[in-house]
Amino acid sequence: MIQINLLPPEMRVAARGSAAAQLPWRRIGFWVAGLAMLISVVLPLNNGLRAHRLERLRGEWKALQPQLEKLKQAVILQGVKAPQVKWSPRLALLADALVPQVWLTHLEYAQGKNLRVEGSALVGLAGDGSGQVTQFMQHLKERPEFHQWFDNVELESVQHRQIQNEEIVDFVLLLTPTG
Image (tube, rainbow, N blue to C red; front, side):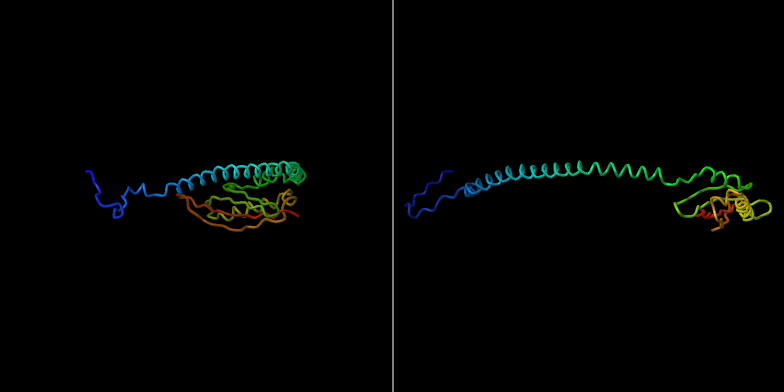
């Protein structure tokens, strides 16, 4: 449909356009162009700062490498010079002192602390698994090499349990190292 405005020019109302025609395109264009320029300046500047920081950190890392190598060598030498516990004769002592129907389940040692020996014993016809544990402790103390490495052996705990039709005694011994 065609509209014709027959009113004199001073009484005419300005023609309404679409909403898109009324937007301030020039301002929006300036803002978009300014934002694009800002991004094109800030991103490379940020990347340049990161690259500079990375190069500085790499330089510091290279400067620390000789100290790191010295530290690694010191740790290696310390491990070589440290007195080593020879475990094979100590384990052989434990194995030789075992009595029938007694077995070891776990050994634990921390430098400067007690040797923790966990084991189990099958309760025999005599009905006393604790007697077998006591006998194992006595066998340990009777060995001459025991006193080279340990000062004492003590019974920390004893627990009874049933597996199928067999009674088992679980025990924990603490062996105090000499020194």
